Image 1: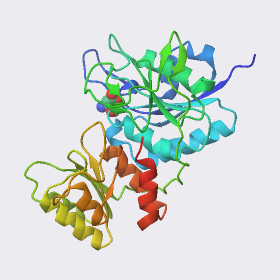
Image 2 (image 1 turned 45 degrees about the vertical axis):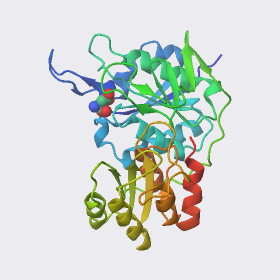
Image 3 (image 1 turned 60 degrees about the horizontal axis):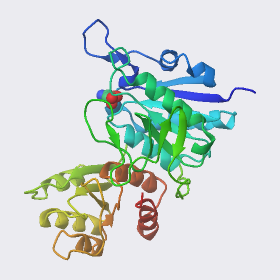
Image 4 (image 1 turned 90 degrees about the vertical axis):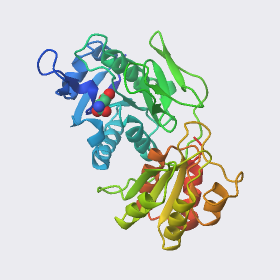
Length: 332
Ligand code: ASP
């Protein structure tokens, strides 16, 4: 039987880092070809096609890098690849995976992985994550599920996954949901049928994200949101408390901004449950914000809501259409 083809795109991160001298701090060193050589077994699973989009640490990855990866992944699948494996730094992995997920318009799996321990240290998780992610990207049962994140033999949906620990393996989880599947003796097992997914969105053009993300905090006098809006951001996400709450001062800033035509979204800084619509009626609460035209992010984290908003605004959506699209994506 002919071997399937696996497309592998490297986007930097710890998985591509090694210490330049023994004992030194890890630095970007490995391109995609070097990475796939970390697991010689990959060549037995599939014919590999590789590209190196970037070797940057993931805090410096930008939307243009993600769009480059998206275009390459589409072209590979259209040219016969069974699936796509993307390697990425773990710090912002969930954001790139989510952005790719809302744009991914092919049935083939696109799987993102990384490593918590760089490839040259004892106990590195790079080879096992690469192998598990490759198996998932090649698995027929992973098709039609959008973008998946595979680490520590767990499969997560891009919309749900988050990095919940700063160090050590097993740093990723899908709070409130759990993983969508697992690798068992090399076989990919999903716990349910493919979920219904919103229609893929049009890719934004290149350029920076014009959506600011700020966190709602105790003793918040509204200055942060005001400074962000004065700096010229066209839209703002406030990662609010509980069901989507901000201080009275910040709510006044947000409501005034909405009246000026700024798009304002409130998410929940908690990791389970998301924002509400109908529980509290005080100044700064979800009902008062909604009544003033502020939108709620539902179960999407603030950092994912920011990227979704970027895509929706760039697609030209405003008003009711924007609210409906956000609502459609807000249940993960
Ligand atoms: N600092 C690294 C990054 O996100 C961490 C990692 O990849 O695990 O690029």
